[in-house]
Amino acid sequence: MNRILLFLTVLFTLSEANSSLVLLDRIAVVVDEDVIMLSEVEERLAAVKAQITANDEAPPDDVLTEQVIERLIIEHLQIQMAERAGMRIGDAELNDTIQRIAAQNNLSLPQFQQAIEQDGMSYVAMREQVRREVTISQVQQGVMSSRIEISDQEMKNFLASELGEAIVADEYRIAHILLTIPEDANAKEISAVRTQALDLISRVTNGESFQALAIEHSAGQNASKGGDLGWRKPVQLPTIFADVAPEMAIGETKGPIKSGSGFHVITLTDKRGAKTQGQIAQTRARHVLVKPSEIRSDAEARELAENLRIEVSNGRDFEEIAKLHSEDPGSALNGGDLDWNQAGIFVPEFETMIHTLDLNVLSPVFKTSHGYHFLEVTGRRIEDFSEQFQQNMAAEYLRNQKFEEELNSWLREIREEAFVDIRI
Image 1: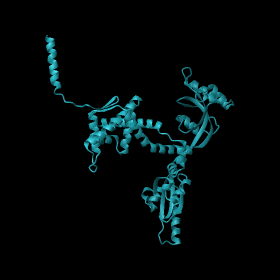
Image 2: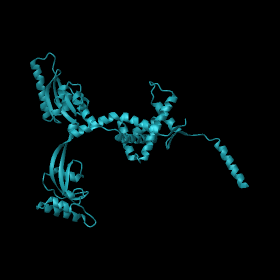
Image 3: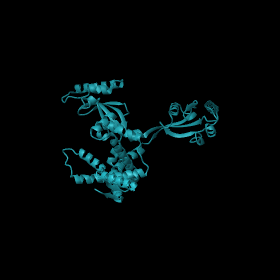
Image 4: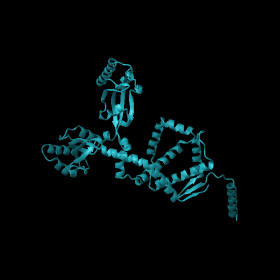
């Protein structure tokens, strides 16, 4: 009897306590297998209002709330998709992203953190928001890569168009010195200015800084920047430079070039684009690898490699030795042949040997993290991939043109297919 009375007393006490509880949060929207809490809607609403300046006319609260809810629904659907695919943004990737955001705002990470907190947002909350946005971006990129297709004919038509030619054109970084000619100058005065331009070219050729000479002598608008015009495509360059720049080598200086303004001296400080990146140096080599193991000490591995090298240097076929003794499974069956490769493919010690060795010369035995090698460079060439680079640039441009439209279409689809129960 006492136990029943005690139970009823406790129940009555809890009931009284519950009657004074304050509701802290509640479900605002159900989105498939997920929920959006009221606090999340209110936080986002406050953030949106904070971004509306005094000069902007804010929509009514009910309209703004509806827009925020729709945005959150779309976000949650994409986050769910990422979770089902096992996609997760790790702390290292998140830290790199935040570092880039801080750098873009010319802030150090501590300064960026301080700025975030001064705006009334916790740094932890900001990190999670960035993680969320990066996740959504990766979901969108993955889906769009399978939905957006660029046909061969579409690519061909674009590359043949005026816009296509401009998009894939190389860019040039030119610096220039302008020596002006007075409007009423006679032949002798014009000749004197030309002689001055030739003298400047000679001084640059002999090692003087073009930038310093531009600051001192140029009458051009960019003189204070050493005459630097920045990165420009041919269509963005003055005609007298556009005709010359494509034929110049990096570091080359040309002039005097006469225009209505006077005489110009130009230098090509750099260039980039399909034609520049497309010219790739490649090396072909073959090697033999001997690895230390549980039954072969490091010294024994080196000795075996030395002995095999001696056999090759005495006339035994390299290919035969590689097939019989090399422990590199990727090349042994091909007689040690590594095919054509560009710089940066191999470990540093191998790279150094392969790029300093003369053709058809047997290297000494050397060690890398894989074991002991000796190799022979069998060929060098410059391969032109400029056409492939142009196609890649064109494909990226066309894909970006389609991205927004296709993304909006896909977002409408997933919204229509989702179960959504708005409770506010």
